[in-house]
Amino acid sequence: MNLTRSFSAWRQYRQTVSELGRMSNRELHDLGIDRTDIRVVARAAVNKR
Image (cartoon, rainbow, N blue to C red; front, side, top):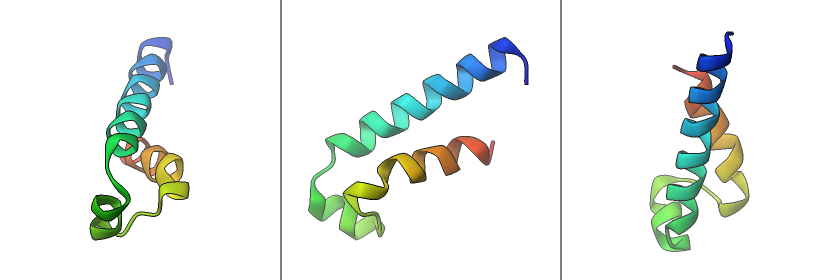
């Protein structure tokens, strides 16, 4: 992975963590996500691209 791709993936990861972190526990529960799993979910979302 080149530097530009790595930086882009990192930014996408941080944005996803931030967006999920702003959600309430109820909203996260509706999505089937536990607050402790936010980073794992964000990493998986970035790795799928």
